[in-house]
Amino acid sequence: MPPCLLLTRPEAESAAFAQAARAAGWRGDILCAPLMRILHDPPPETALTKARTLVVTSQHGVAALQQATARRDWPVWCVGPRTAEAARHAGFAQVRVADGDAVSLRAVLLDTSPPAPVLHLRGEHAAMDLASELQAAGVDAHALVVYRQVSQGLSQAAQERLTQGGDILLPVFSPRSARLLVAALIPLRLDAARLHLVAISAAARDAAQGVDWQSIHCAARPDAPSMLQALARLQATLEPLKKPR
Image 1 (tube, rainbow, N blue to C red):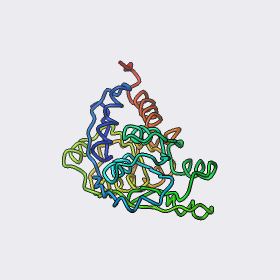
Image 2 (cartoon, rainbow, N blue to C red):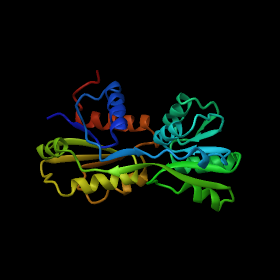
Image 3 (tube, one colour):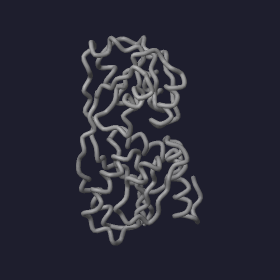
């Protein structure tokens, strides 16, 4: 049985990553089984007027901002390249980008001192309370929840594939998604499965405790290209006699 790539990100992100994985040479099955769905909650435009710099840590923050206002004159700081691409596509001209995680975003914001007040448009769940971190460093910063990540159960198709066994690769892109994955796996009978964790960060890896992983891998950088590289290395290990197409 060939290895299976099981993607549990929200639907749009899973579909995009599946396409990127195919383009990068993934040969096995791909099954998308989101453990979260995204609900946008665009703020009233009046909630944005005092901000002089906007910070977004997800494409969903950009989408909620698009729905909230037609203004595009703010400088926008983005956590990584994909979020920055979404901001530019939405019409923002002053877009700057960090290195893919909240730690690097906090560092670059403190280093560059953008115009304040700074407003972080974030999800209900976040790996870091960025506004509080900036406040502690003396920055006039605030946060506004503009989307919610609602958890949901593992699909029946995913449960059946897991219980069939074989090598199953499970990428996780945040500590919360790792915890949701563990909670979904624990009740299942996985005696025949060899589960391989591929984490985007050490924090995501450490949040995935409680499962008997066959192997654990961590991306070199907290971004999608590094996750794809980690998957490719693991694929080469699992299928050593097969050459990439």
